[in-house]
Image (tube, rainbow, N blue to C red; front, top):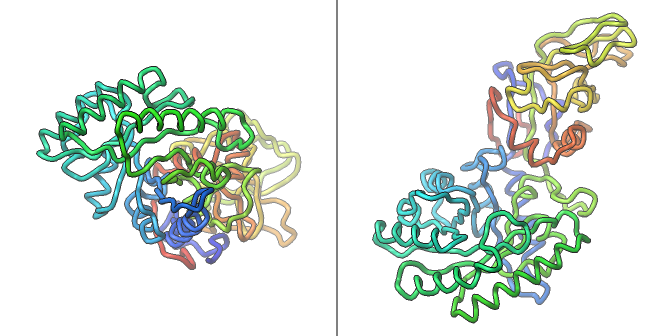
Amino acid sequence: MEESAGMSLPPVARAEIVVDLAAIRHNVAVLRELVSTDEAGTGVAMMTVVKADGYGHGMVEAAGAARAGGADWLGVATIDEALALRAGGDSGRVLCWLGVPGEDYAAAVAADVDLTAYSTAELDEIAVGAEQAGRPARLQLKVDTGLSRGGAPEEAWPGVVAAARAGEQAGHWRVTGIWSHFACSDEPDHPANDVQERAFRDALDVADAAGLRPEVRHLANSAAAILRPSSRFDLVRCGLASYGLDPAPGHTRDLGLVPAMTVRASLAMVKSIATGAGVSYGHTWVADHDTTVGLVPVGYGDGVPRHAGNAAETWVAGRRRPVRGRICMDQFLVDLSGDSSGDPAAAGDEVVLFGTGRAGEPTAQDWAEACGTISYEIVTRIGGRFTRRHHDGGDPA
């Protein structure tokens, strides 16, 4: 796969997000091979999570690439996302898991989407939706094993299981899965991981005793799928890693994953400034030497983190160039000094905010570290007035 940094920017693009579908397809295939079995050698299915517009990469396009890479399932948060996948042509297994009272469960049942319930109240609503749709729902149950977020708490779990079994016997649904979610899988030695896996196994015993026989039991997200084979069960849910980013920085070995997103823009202006000149709002950076700065025509209104000011780096004219001063709503400045050849760049030249890193350009992980956040936030928040373009390997220009 080719580097994206240093490629000539098409003159029509002011600022764009370029997504390499071949990278997503490659990453899913790599992950599928890595986690294809559990500790006992039993086969494990792969879910690619495409919620939040495919982690900023474009949900329908990312889903197609994931299916081509071998994804058995797709995962989304909301019913709207699941229905958008169906409208986009996907007909495979899709699980959604975040509902509120009054959701249109009938539409999801009619679209053959697997739904998730956390409570008996939610089960009641899904039963009504199944009746309205005129067919049984496909239902999964989520148990809270220690994240203290969505999912039935331990004390409510037996009641949820009993209600789910009764609804299955009544023909309202088929229970297709039981699952939970780790809180600390990106810290493989954290004691909560053992506690949660034990709690999940206990919850499965409760469900089994009640007569539930789900198709899939799943607990592992990207980090756990890679680092904790005992948690793979029948299915793993890989989100961030599918887009080529490390779900547990400092703990995962190089798997050959390729970041699928390159974010770049055309320099709007290049100017010289003198020693002592303050840069951007608040003059949080003052030039300590005569230098040249480049104006990048995107800002926090486009999802560029404001915390990147005086912290992150970009790639211009074959070198990393630091962000100087505060990120503004529509623009920010980079320092172009230090090039012995004179002015290193001109208006219209390419600036890469982050990309694959193969040519030396910053990555989303580099921006995350500079901003004190995680790469999930960097790729999912970028957008605004950026255009997004998909290509399938090779030169994104």
